Length: 164
Figure 1 (cartoon, one colour):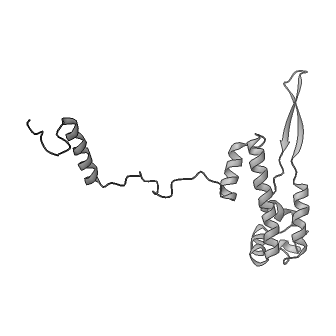
Figure 2 (cartoon, rainbow, N blue to C red):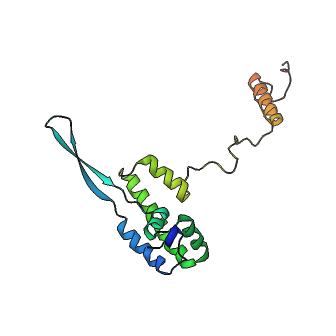
Figure 3 (cartoon, rainbow, N blue to C red):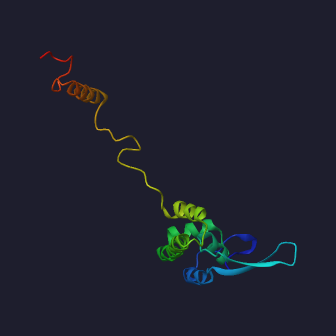
Protein backbone atom coordinates (compact mmCIF):
# COMPACT_ATOMS: atom_id res chain seq x y z
CA UNK A 1 0.00 0.00 0.00
CA UNK A 2 2.75 2.50 0.83
CA UNK A 3 6.18 1.37 -0.42
CA UNK A 4 8.08 2.79 -3.36
CA UNK A 5 10.30 0.68 -5.60
CA UNK A 6 13.32 -0.52 -3.65
CA UNK A 7 11.42 -0.73 -0.35
CA UNK A 8 11.78 2.89 0.76
CA UNK A 9 8.62 4.33 2.32
CA UNK A 10 6.53 7.04 0.73
CA UNK A 11 6.09 10.35 2.47
CA UNK A 12 3.29 10.66 5.00
CA UNK A 13 -0.21 10.58 3.53
CA UNK A 14 -3.35 11.84 5.24
CA UNK A 15 -5.01 8.56 4.18
CA UNK A 16 -2.87 6.76 6.79
CA UNK A 17 -5.03 8.34 9.48
CA UNK A 18 -8.16 6.63 8.11
CA UNK A 19 -6.16 3.45 7.51
CA UNK A 20 -5.90 3.05 11.30
CA UNK A 21 -9.66 2.40 11.50
CA UNK A 22 -9.44 -0.08 8.61
CA UNK A 23 -6.59 -1.85 10.35
CA UNK A 24 -8.47 -2.07 13.65
CA UNK A 25 -11.46 -3.63 11.86
CA UNK A 26 -9.36 -6.55 10.60
CA UNK A 27 -7.68 -7.07 13.98
CA UNK A 28 -10.26 -9.35 15.50
CA UNK A 29 -9.41 -12.61 17.20
CA UNK A 30 -10.76 -15.73 15.53
CA UNK A 31 -11.91 -18.92 17.17
CA UNK A 32 -10.21 -21.86 15.52
CA UNK A 33 -10.78 -25.58 15.75
CA UNK A 34 -7.89 -27.98 15.74
CA UNK A 35 -8.25 -31.66 15.04
CA UNK A 36 -5.92 -34.01 16.90
CA UNK A 37 -5.37 -37.68 16.41
CA UNK A 38 -3.46 -39.99 18.68
CA UNK A 39 -2.29 -42.34 15.94
CA UNK A 40 -5.42 -44.47 16.15
CA UNK A 41 -8.89 -43.76 14.85
CA UNK A 42 -9.51 -41.52 17.85
CA UNK A 43 -10.05 -37.88 16.89
CA UNK A 44 -10.41 -35.00 19.31
CA UNK A 45 -11.34 -31.42 18.62
CA UNK A 46 -9.74 -28.52 20.42
CA UNK A 47 -10.85 -24.94 20.27
CA UNK A 48 -8.48 -22.07 20.53
CA UNK A 49 -8.05 -18.46 19.62
CA UNK A 50 -6.03 -17.09 16.75
CA UNK A 51 -5.02 -13.77 18.24
CA UNK A 52 -4.88 -10.72 16.00
CA UNK A 53 -3.84 -8.10 18.51
CA UNK A 54 -3.44 -4.66 16.95
CA UNK A 55 0.02 -3.14 17.23
CA UNK A 56 2.02 -0.30 15.75
CA UNK A 57 4.24 -2.87 14.04
CA UNK A 58 1.21 -4.60 12.56
CA UNK A 59 -0.13 -1.28 11.30
CA UNK A 60 3.22 -0.50 9.66
CA UNK A 61 3.01 -3.83 7.82
CA UNK A 62 -0.62 -3.12 6.91
CA UNK A 63 0.25 0.13 5.13
CA UNK A 64 3.59 -1.20 3.86
CA UNK A 65 6.05 1.15 5.56
CA UNK A 66 8.88 0.80 8.02
CA UNK A 67 8.02 1.02 11.70
CA UNK A 68 10.56 3.84 12.07
CA UNK A 69 8.55 5.90 9.56
CA UNK A 70 5.43 5.45 11.70
CA UNK A 71 7.22 6.85 14.76
CA UNK A 72 8.67 9.78 12.78
CA UNK A 73 5.25 10.65 11.37
CA UNK A 74 3.72 10.37 14.83
CA UNK A 75 6.05 13.13 16.08
CA UNK A 76 5.32 15.38 13.09
CA UNK A 77 1.53 14.97 12.69
CA UNK A 78 -0.78 15.44 15.69
CA UNK A 79 -3.80 13.84 13.98
CA UNK A 80 -1.74 10.78 13.13
CA UNK A 81 -0.56 10.56 16.75
CA UNK A 82 -4.21 10.56 17.88
CA UNK A 83 -4.98 7.79 15.38
CA UNK A 84 -2.04 5.68 16.61
CA UNK A 85 -3.23 6.19 20.18
CA UNK A 86 -6.42 4.37 19.13
CA UNK A 87 -4.31 1.33 18.29
CA UNK A 88 -2.59 1.49 21.66
CA UNK A 89 -5.89 1.96 23.49
CA UNK A 90 -7.60 -0.96 21.76
CA UNK A 91 -4.55 -3.13 22.37
CA UNK A 92 -4.45 -2.25 26.06
CA UNK A 93 -8.16 -2.89 26.60
CA UNK A 94 -8.02 -6.24 24.80
CA UNK A 95 -4.98 -7.31 26.79
CA UNK A 96 -6.65 -6.39 30.08
CA UNK A 97 -10.02 -7.94 29.25
CA UNK A 98 -8.73 -11.12 27.60
CA UNK A 99 -5.93 -11.46 30.13
CA UNK A 100 -8.42 -11.33 33.01
CA UNK A 101 -10.69 -13.79 31.20
CA UNK A 102 -7.80 -16.22 30.73
CA UNK A 103 -8.06 -16.08 26.93
CA UNK A 104 -4.57 -14.64 26.45
CA UNK A 105 -1.37 -15.96 27.98
CA UNK A 106 -0.90 -14.21 31.33
CA UNK A 107 2.87 -14.07 30.84
CA UNK A 108 2.67 -12.42 27.43
CA UNK A 109 -0.16 -10.15 28.57
CA UNK A 110 1.90 -8.92 31.52
CA UNK A 111 4.96 -8.46 29.32
CA UNK A 112 3.14 -6.30 26.76
CA UNK A 113 1.23 -4.30 29.36
CA UNK A 114 4.44 -3.54 31.26
CA UNK A 115 6.65 -2.81 28.27
CA UNK A 116 4.17 -0.95 26.03
CA UNK A 117 1.61 0.48 28.43
CA UNK A 118 3.54 1.35 31.58
CA UNK A 119 1.55 -1.02 33.78
CA UNK A 120 4.16 -2.26 36.22
CA UNK A 121 4.18 -3.60 39.70
CA UNK A 122 4.97 -0.58 41.80
CA UNK A 123 7.77 -0.14 44.29
CA UNK A 124 7.85 2.23 47.21
CA UNK A 125 9.14 5.41 45.62
CA UNK A 126 9.36 7.28 48.93
CA UNK A 127 12.16 5.18 50.42
CA UNK A 128 13.97 4.13 47.26
CA UNK A 129 13.49 0.48 48.28
CA UNK A 130 15.39 1.10 51.51
CA UNK A 131 13.86 0.04 54.83
CA UNK A 132 11.70 2.74 56.36
CA UNK A 133 13.64 3.72 59.46
CA UNK A 134 13.39 7.35 60.56
CA UNK A 135 15.97 6.81 63.35
CA UNK A 136 19.75 6.88 63.20
CA UNK A 137 21.73 3.94 64.60
CA UNK A 138 22.59 6.05 67.63
CA UNK A 139 18.91 6.78 68.31
CA UNK A 140 18.01 3.11 67.93
CA UNK A 141 20.74 2.19 70.46
CA UNK A 142 19.40 4.75 72.97
CA UNK A 143 15.84 3.44 72.54
CA UNK A 144 17.04 -0.15 73.00
CA UNK A 145 18.93 0.84 76.18
CA UNK A 146 15.84 2.55 77.61
CA UNK A 147 13.69 -0.49 76.91
CA UNK A 148 16.25 -2.78 78.52
CA UNK A 149 16.48 -0.48 81.56
CA UNK A 150 12.72 -0.36 82.01
CA UNK A 151 12.55 -4.12 81.91
CA UNK A 152 15.11 -4.15 84.73
CA UNK A 153 12.87 -1.79 86.66
CA UNK A 154 14.93 1.38 86.94
CA UNK A 155 12.41 3.65 85.21
CA UNK A 156 14.16 4.03 81.91
CA UNK A 157 17.48 5.42 83.12
CA UNK A 158 20.43 4.01 81.32
CA UNK A 159 23.18 2.35 83.27
CA UNK A 160 23.11 -0.25 86.00
CA UNK A 161 20.03 -0.80 88.11
CA UNK A 162 19.88 1.46 91.16
CA UNK A 163 19.60 -0.19 94.57
CA UNK A 164 16.34 0.30 96.53
